[in-house]
Length: 344
Image (tube, rainbow, N blue to C red):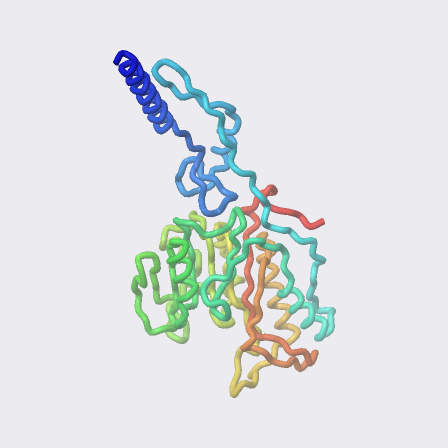
């Protein structure tokens, strides 16, 4: 009988001790930060952002002390995973387009230029329709889309696939614009706001009766002039050339991380499938110089896609070309050295 009582006491003591240990472990279970779906980022403060400075500060402390009933329990800090670079910076020979070249040389070099990637994003995804109407987004750090991301989309027509994808999948706030469609201002969803205005070189109304505003004006209206814009997309049917010039002159791209837009040559304008206008040597030089302004702002091209529905045969080179390309740029001002691999 006495042995049974002693055995019962031992069991009770063991159970109590186990309960005490488990409780302490639960209370003082330390986590260094919240890991997002992207394994290369760590959120120290659990605030939805990558905290480089906070991570460095914590790593400088090898141990963290926790008070416990006048004792100290020490736990070794778990280091966050090292950033694995996923952006390859290519060594590309400059491609020039100059007035001293022949018409054929200018045309060839222009198309070589828009089909040359300055950088390779190793985590590149196409969102929206996989053909015309979709756009590529780089998800390699420090890029990507995660709540609360902000996307500006100009030129909708009847294709909402890209806007819907970034809002539904990544929970981005999307600001959509198109003055050419019949829909009035409305909220397509809780995350997509549509406004019946377009992006232009100045504020006003054009000959078609469309209200146009500069990107800077629109950003100020939405109180986003000092906010990081994760992605800017526009498909505005040949007006991209004058708008790109205005974006450069206005200086409204400094806070934009990625840009995707469609470019068009004169062969876009057709009648009965025949081009109404031919792109001249002067046109190619002008378009090349406009694209060069993005390079001067440290935007580098990471992808392109030609539109197979815009094919035409050049009268100068007799080569089959496309009048329309999607091209995609990343703002390298956001990129630190440890995010990139330089091609050797």
